[in-house]
Length: 83
Image 1 (cartoon, rainbow, N blue to C red):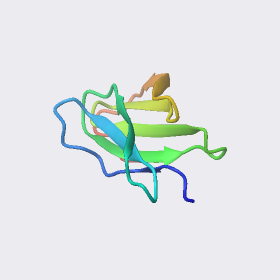
Image 2 (image 1 turned 180 degrees about the horizontal axis):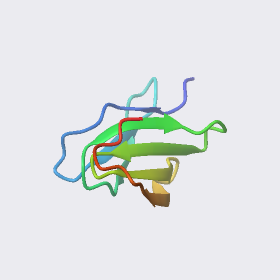
Image 3 (image 1 turned 90 degrees about the vertical axis):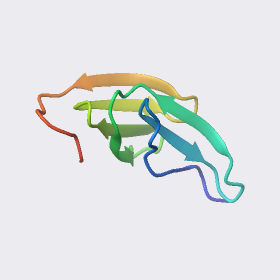
Image 4 (image 1 turned 180 degrees about the vertical axis):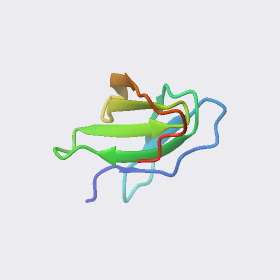
């Protein structure tokens, strides 16, 4: 069976990233914390973490299995974070 995969960024008023598991396709977590649209997400090499970048110019590291925000980085970006 395939493991959990990220969905597309949502259009919720509070930016969030949703995850589901395949083949069932049930939502398992909503990661809340960014104040702008989530533009990018990538799993860490070990598969335990998820990095997200947002219009709020921050980057977050999540433990996607339990939905916990591990690290919040205030970047020096003056615009959206896309990669």
